[in-house]
Length: 125
Length: 125
DNA sequence: TGACATATATCCTTTAAGTACATATGGAGG
DNA sequence: CCTCCATATGTACTTAAAGGATATATGTCA
Image (cartoon, rainbow over all chains, first blue to last red; front, side):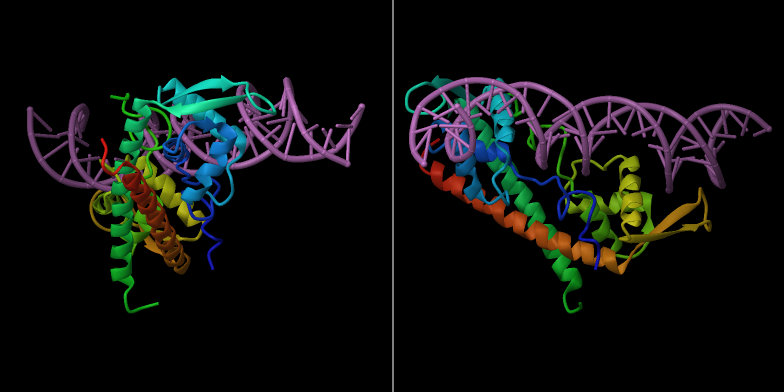
């Protein structure tokens, strides 16, 4: 057995492809909300084993706001600490469309690769 | 138009998901060869726009050899500078199977995401 | 009043990819 | 013969993006 493919890329290594940005954009399609809630919303897309550390999504949210993909405002109403409510901008919706097309193409390539592999190994192993 | 989604992840940014390691493993399934030849072999899998810079694949090849996924030997025969001929090990074949399963799962997740997006946006835009 | 849950935010580190450059060999042309 | 070029391999530095730890604030509840 190989040592679980330690090293580059994906299987087994630390750095995953978690698609946090498109997940956040997608989650915001269901309506504006605050960061902590987005954390649980994006879990259902299946790209991460566990919930990502909170710090992570704030980093993304800040960056996305800088890029004009989201807008935000403080919400002091309600209990607990004040929340910052994020919403999608038109640019954000466009970016998500971009992502969807990219992800579609990527899925095709991945499928093509796997198909090719299965053909190559058909009838052995 | 958004500024082409500058920033994180994939569409438009620098860091791509090029799957060089699985591509190299797959290319070696067609038989042992040297690095420069692998460069052109892996182009056909479609993960990179252009051929990756040569230095890159040597980095990968060295790392893969450290991990026991490939073996190599000098070939001084023939013209030009000596070549190093790489071949797959059993661990390498197993790692490729690993990759194939990973890529299959990833493709499913991507398709699921895109499907969900298309449903959400059906009938508008 | 002190632990706890929610919520936001900043920092430093690690990983892997991008980029540029350094080396070596043999062939072709002036 | 000497330079330039194509092939071929390799090292080194830089950047990008994710991982992870930690800091801050607030209101609830025991």
